[in-house]
Amino acid sequence: MSLIPDPTVAHPLPEHERVVFLEPLVTDPRIEIGEFTYYDDPDGAEEFERRNVLYAYGPERLVIGKYCALATGTRFLMAGAAHPQLGVSTFPFTMFGGAWAERTLDIVTSMPSRGDTVVGNDVWFGRGVTVMPGVTIGDGAVVATGAVVTSDVPPYTVVAGNPARTVRRRYDDEDVERLLRAAWWDWPVEAVTEHVRTIMTGTPAQIEAIGAERRKTGDPDGRGSHA
Image 1 (cartoon, one colour):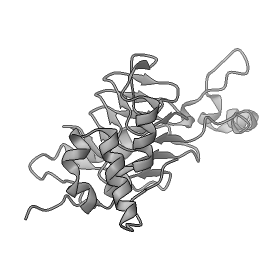
Image 2 (image 1 turned 60 degrees about the vertical axis):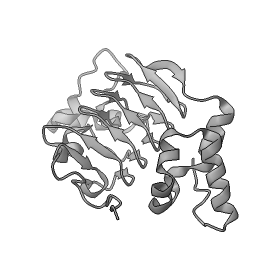
Image 3 (image 1 turned 30 degrees about the vertical axis):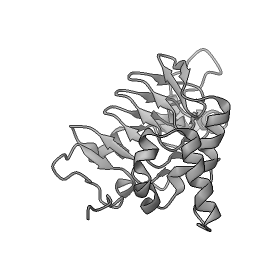
């Protein structure tokens, strides 16, 4: 019998080192990445935390859900990238220490934070995407190649461009609610495996029906949860 991929193994495809599951590679407690979310990069995919999560100087978190696909060059700019804009200069004097820091530290510490960056589950990022600080990207969204995400993206929405704008919605409101209720990404991996063909090719109604049947049979993880 074929094996289910192990989410604790950094290289799920030994013959393709460019593909890594990110959860076992994360060491920063401010970064939380769900099972089976992967990054594809031919040049040092293991360095995602250092090379692709930028300006993480503050307490703000990066949260990425399960089953997300991140293409080469997907980068997250954290809130530490912000420069003061209270006066005529945006130069970051404070970061160079010494007398500059002594005279300006209060300016930086009093700046409002853009907050955590949160990505839902089953989100697909095209090559070279940039996500700005404090953005929330909903479950099932698709972010096109080269997009710069500067504002929140609703669930199951396709966005593209700089700044990223809605191209289309993948499903209507009723179907989106079906999918969010089913939350298939929270099913045990054995259940995901059992229904993987339907997850890949089925309708929201079919996914909802599977979730309802799992709840009916007493599966504690049949419903899942979503923000």
